[in-house]
Every structure is written in structure tokens, then in C-alpha cells.
Length: 423
Image (cartoon, rainbow, N blue to C red; front, top):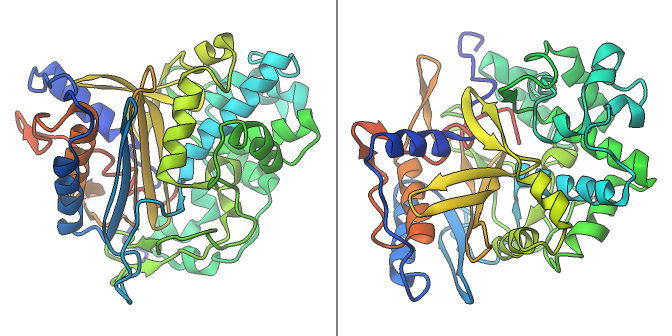
């Protein structure tokens, strides 16, 4: 099937790009958030709409001040019809990067890491030559290192229009240094520090190795003790086995119609994602985490300010305002901070207002359900329905329609959820 080549990267920030286009066109001027907390009936309707559009299962938690709503719609297991629940443990993919960045910035506050020091100071020889002397810790965290992503060489069949790599590597253990080697062997996407940056998972595997070198501890153990536990999270972890801990859904991968019916990758060795994307969590824990972070409970003010200094970064060709393991998204009702993530069969979005008062985290259990035409991912009804849920959750039940405006589709992550080769 060598004639069918899947995109090797795609815009994780299609939501931000489309929203920006709509705002520039003056077609989205949304209302302030609805008074009285989350509109439970409207939120439930939007979840059902995602399910009705073709998603197997979606679970979500919305917070507005002291008021919380949690809901779920659809099935966790397509064979048995077992229903999804709001409290399910979920692979959150690249949201892991925020946790890693917090751990690094804690070390910055202690004086053991300097953000603008070269990576070679901490990992001599791992990034060879001039790049090791030029690429800084900050460049890893904000994706301006221009080190290539390792995902394509880790799953080479995806570049040939085949899912064989996904099946072959289900129980494959791959060391972080091997992932870094793959990334460094790729063609750099630019000069270190150049804008715009280029999103690459290799950066955060390197950040994990740097954290280990400085602390003398396993990166996952260190993040668990100093970030996860400090935030009071009870259902968040780096699993040590291919299994998702606790009650969870299947992880159904469609791979743009290649897997028909979609294949369940719920049991999978996540060493390929590591500190770039291996964490599992719940929607409640994610909201707790970002609220604690944005309210200054995990970082000192100086480090939190550094985290929120954004630069333009291209994710699959679309620009996003990326900080240090977190990005900013301007919605009609204000600026929100957070991250999203996608692994084989599972995708997640988590966004919080700047004061941590308004929050949304939701997960879905089917990915790459779109089709590809002329090398581009074609938006699916599921994408539009997810944006409706996002807008109702964060901007209120009267938020403007997410369907179209001035002929421009408004999508959350048609390719982030569709990109076959990144967490």
C-alpha cells in the first residue's frame, strides 16, 4: 500500500488557527460566560452530539468557580456496550509536556538548571556538535530547538500508508536515548532559536533525560513526587505496564479508514511516548492540575511567568502561541491556557482561564476517524461537535455556532486528533 502516504505531522492547533481567522473576520464575538455556573443541560446535549456524530465515547468535566459538572456519553467498549463514565482514566498524550515543564522549572527555581544554558552543559555528547552548544533548555521546552520529531522513524510504516508499525510495536520497549537518536538523525527544521519554532516530541524526551541527570532520579518518579503529588492528583501516573490503570475505555484507532472497524490499542507499551506523552489521568485530575498551576501552587511567580512567555510555534504548519509546555488560546470569551494530546486511539483537550476559574477537560476514545483527500485531512462532523462542546463549556450556552463562519470551518483539532505519528 505504498501509494497511500499519511501526513507525518498535522496541526495540533487547528482550533487556535481557525478561531483566529474567525475573530479576524469579525464573525465570532461571543458572549461572556453564562452566569450561574455550567449549563448542565446544554453540556449534556453537546456531549450526545459528539456521540451521535460518530465518536464512540466522550467524557468531560467543566468547572466554573466552585461549580463543577461532569458528564459522559457513548460506550467504552464497542463489543459489550459498556458505557463510558466521567471518571475514567485516560491516556492524555502531550499534556504530559506540561508536567515535565513544571518539573524542569522547579529545578530552575532551585538553581540547578538555567533556562538559557546549552543542553550540552547537562547532557554532554548526547546532542553532538554545534547543536549541543547552541540549543538551550528553553528551546527544548518551547520547541524552538528545531530538532526533528522521532515519531516517523519510530513508526515507519505510517509514511507508507500502512498501520503495520502500530501492530508490530504494541509491546516494544524503546529507550529514551534511542528516541533522541532518531530525532537527531532527522533533518533539522531550522536554526536553533529561530522563529517560528517547530513542534517536536524529541524536545521533551531530551527534557526528561536532562531532569534525570540533574536530579539523579528516574524522570517519571521525580515528576510523580514533585508535580503529581504536589498538585494532589490521585489518579494520574506514568504507567509501568502496557495497561491503563483503573477504570478505562478502549482506545480505538481508525487510521483514516485503514482500520475498519477501528482497532483497539488500549493495551500498548507507551515507552515510545515517555516524557513526551505517556501520562494517564482523569478529567478531574487535569482540571485540578491546571488550576493549581495557574494559581501559583506548583511554581514560584518568576517561573510561572517564564512558562507563559509564548513564541510562535508551527504544529503541522499552523502557528500556535506556545510557552514552556503550555499554550495560549484566545476564545471569544477570553484567553485560556492548557494543552492537548493524542495517542493511538485516545485524544484529550484541557483548557483553563488565566485565573483557573473556568476549565474544561475532555477525552475521546476514537482517533483519526477523518478521511484524507489530496494529502489533507478532511474535517468530520465529530470535529464540529467537539468544538460546540468546547464553546458551550467555556463561553456559555449562547456561544456562537462552531459550524462555519464566512465559509471558514471552525475545528478543534482535525489533525491533532488525526495526526498518525505524534502523541
